[in-house]
Amino acid sequence: MRQLAEYEKAGYLSRRFNRCPYCDNNDLEFGAIVANGRTASNDVTCRTCEAKWVDQWTRTGISEEIEATCDDCGWVGGRSEVTWPPKDLADRLDPGGVVPAGDCPDCGAFTYLAVAR
Image (cartoon, rainbow, N blue to C red):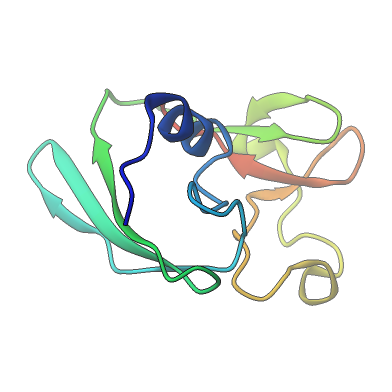
């Protein structure tokens, strides 16, 4: 497996970990998150190109309100402001896709929990 360039790693992070950094496919299998103090990690496998890597997580702080964002209209707000459960969740969610935080209060599209960058 080839080494990823820094821009490819940055691209993976900016796409919220939902597309393979090697082939750009979204058919990913995520292993269990293993926490160890201030860090955590999980194995990831791309079902398309069979690439494997490890997502690494770092605790960056604490927040009393979890932030959610809408990729469709750009809305940003608290997790408590979105509609849960999302309307027609089973029909709108792709198999293996990221589970949304809820429906956007402005446009009704899925919102997702913000990822520390």
